[in-house]
Length: 149
Image (cartoon, rainbow, N blue to C red; front, side, top):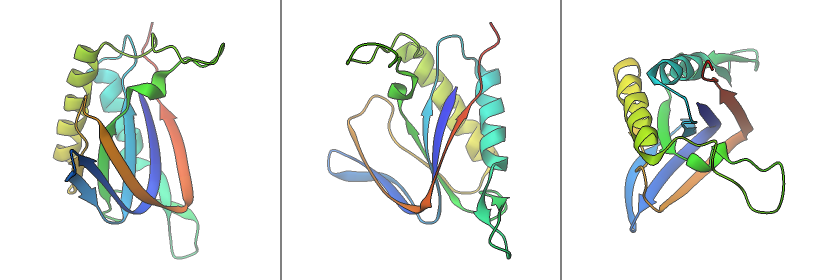
């Protein structure tokens, strides 16, 4: 599974002109399931995400996690993160999980996040979403947990 996380001062997701998820300071996270991923990879990625130190401590060093600072989490499904862009000028999405598996794993990821973190908002799987954010820093990290083949 893949997560592209951005430290934000604010972020929101709109669908059909209505805001369906929004946070103040925290992490906006694009989440993607790849073929072969299971709940095991989703859980491992969530643990890594919740503990990843991207917020400053008193000395200005990135030593605090979203959990430490009680920041918001905005989780947005994004299958295009799995694109194979090695050749040509059009991405291939064969590395991405099927829509059914992607939905199942995103739903599991969100449910587990809500059990482990106070403020969790989401985008909508399969929807045409407009995501807006103010990246703080900018700070952006790619996290990936690979399925055991």
